[in-house]
Length: 303
Length: 155
Image (tube, rainbow over all chains, first blue to last red; front, side, top):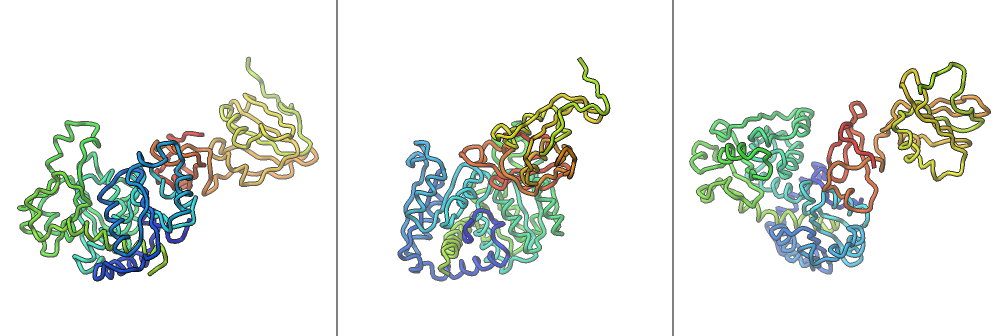
């Protein structure tokens, strides 16, 4: 695997994470620079994701680099039966870095094994999406002024939500206290709770999303509860309205509290929260640009 | 008809030089043959299966003439025959006994249980990290899925 690839958030040490966050702050202050001039980045989206692709392509364009690629596997040769290996090898002849999203889990890890150019994982199925985690960390650091010893409340689908799992792993370095708020069917998996215990990270679990937990929170990380995750639809109907954040629920919350969400949201954050200064999810998405500028230039060894 | 175990009587012809893999579960014998790729070697191979065993009821045994395996090679059968005994024979004498040990990492043999894993969709070799030996827990380094003994599917 090439040294500078980013496949999983656990590929970064604490020092590397902090370095990327520092670089990202520099790009936020000055987003238009020429450091990718003469470089070609390939964005290979075997699965469409307009939001993520535009964020990456904007990051490259603002740094003076050029972009090749495809936004949908149906327009690529993989529909003709080309293997992932062959596509990656072919594109490696043209580009300096590959940014890829794939519907298969482990696709990005495998890609690092067949090429020498850096691979940035922009999502592989339900597995990893490390640049999302880095932008989450950046948003937390920016709004709280620190990463250490924060009270982080994670709400909704904690079982299948890859963003909460990766964020949990990243925050292991920063002594957080976790509150896992989820219905019975979507609890945080045991392997992550075990990791918390092994690292002496305190966590509390509750199925009630109520004032006690909201009043303590520094960060509330909301996620979407998807109907298709439930084997029992009666159970879904019972819980679907219990994990919605309304503006009135924030009345007694701390001043520094910020609400994060990986987006897209459906109804888990009520529209009336949007105008509350504690709502941070739209700015959070914008931070993705600076973080991706940092990750790409770091991967290419240019900063 | 039941085969009776008679002490002192060899159930399979003695080997002059080579390797004997004994105490293979009878239903795993041909899997062991496959994993060690014995069908591809020119050496004399003697296979006995469903032989009477006091400890196992029925067992399989494989004798391979003039062939001595590297530990790495032989350990590949640890997943399916963890209690197999390896005897190295030189001049009709057992000169060395080896115990099979599951390595910390291995390639192939097992199919990842996740249908959306890249290893099940691309012509490539699967790979595993062994998180725990007893109880057996493997982890696919590609899709990160943990695989427990009861879900194990051999390739």
